[in-house]
Image (tube, rainbow, N blue to C red; front, side):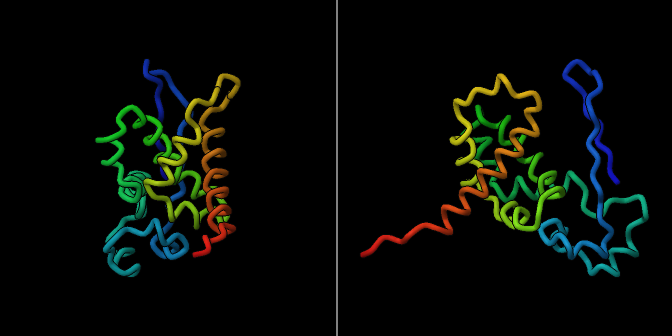
Length: 159
């Protein structure tokens, strides 16, 4: 288990984040979270001690940022970067708590999904939302499901 302490801007305490870190033998269950170019599981288990994480939160977050081409957002959409950062942090959390069908969607996330979600949420009023993180995580999964459904039911144009 990996614990990440969170603090407010003024240094106060916030709820901690906890992540279960799979042993190398269990990595085949979550292929998108496997370290790239890693040695075989038997070699890996010999090289890591029990208290070292095989594929921790930082590595998973970096994997998500690579998949969505984070640098594009930093360069071309700096005013939206706070939301992109938030989504990047939520994707590994969603993956850990989602059903297999949703995990497949999360594994396919691209920059287009992020841009689409930013447009989808633009201009909404969140004043009545008590838990913004949970609300946006739910909205993001619903958005991905709806987009998948639209793609699956789209009728190709007749030529």
